[in-house]
Image (cartoon, rainbow, N blue to C red; front, side):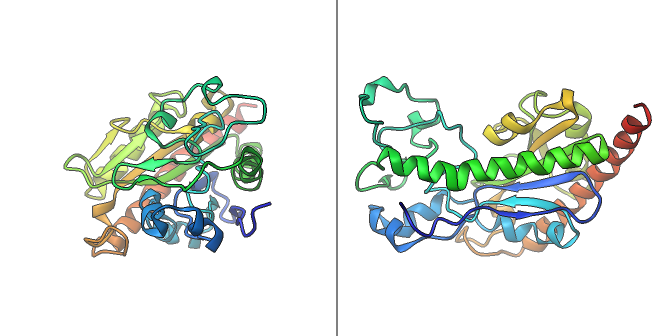
Length: 284
């Protein structure tokens, strides 16, 4: 069994607001055994991170929002990927199967499956594929635990308020386009009125924003967003150059402004769904 795999940090909400945060790609706990398996060490694995998004959300956490935060790095296992996104370059086939028997998913095909196998800059990440039994350990300890925590928290919120919203927080490589992308899986993971309020909140705070282009939302919002059941999920992507220094790893001059953006966006959405939730409960 692999040692020192940190389970997700789960923070229960304490502000009476039916919003839950998901921060899957900011884990920085790199055990020595993991670094020994990596061809290029931490410098390559760190490029998979959404750097410091967990710290960027500090105002939300201080205000009492609940959260699921991955502590294990994305290079170990990606909580924003389906367990079907297996890549034989990073995960050895199960006993009795052949590599070709498991079709590659679209993300695994580009090296970014549930266990990433390569990056554009560094090429192959691992010295050898992960034994399938070790993959199953990672899946149970990190990935399943992460999604079970989200399921539990969202279930409690919708039971108490009649509505719940998951905000899945990410960052994206620098772009010359809009620095904020709101993803709702083209309307399948959240109601349009929530997406539109998120867009207007970003604009109000001085950030150009766009919906579903180029990021419509990944596995987390796809799995947990069930608008018909009162559970909505939005993916929030923020340009890294807006909050990081030129090294794209340490806080930059825009860090505080972007932290304010997330707090304001959540507050605006909380007011909107608070009214909606009250109406839903009154109608029961």
